[in-house]
Length: 276
Image (tube, rainbow, N blue to C red; front, side, top):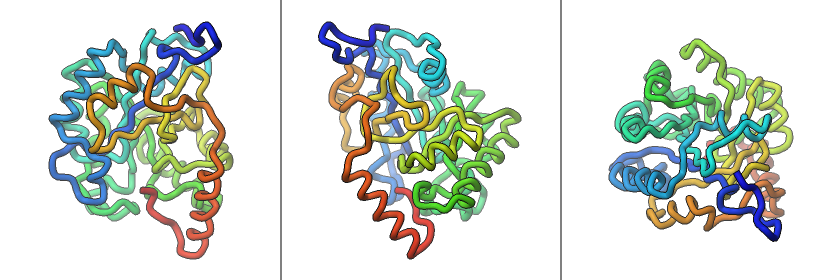
């Protein structure tokens, strides 16, 4: 895969779209509606990805490339799904498997009990934790998305470790093997959170960053592009062409750092806050 153009600029082939989906349904709860894609639109987007000549790979393949130089297809794309909505082990997995498109699902373990009361996520239609092995049968890679979906960069050390370690163990118990990949809720992270993710045994973590990833991206804050209901198939096609977004890695902007400090102060006064 060619990494640089004739003037040293990153080429389209070296720009790796990592897409972030949440629910895929027609009638989502209002709190997640902005980040929900209708099934018909989802099918059109998947067909556009395939038509653009991109080859879907799971996050683990991208991480092996970033960390160890393992080869990737010439034009890779990564499809990820956060939280664990009820559509995931059913029609969404069917749509992916029917097109031979692997993906990575990051599950919020506290939201996947029968009561759904173990997380900060508002009520919504969620899959069950015991369905996680079914995702793997469909060809999905399963990663962790914490227990409660809190803003990790606002938590004290003990609470942060619990979010990372307890969710990892819950998934490993039901899957019967190691869980190596993490998604930060709403992408919120910091150098301290990234160190904690590594110490908890994760090999990678994805953020959001609203950017294209690349062969030089950071394994513990891989950039993703978040799908909103307002995005069109043209947006997806631009991303597949390596256009329409900046390219990671890049340092946090001053507004991002300032927002983090504000959220920390708010959490210190009010307690853990839903990352959303």
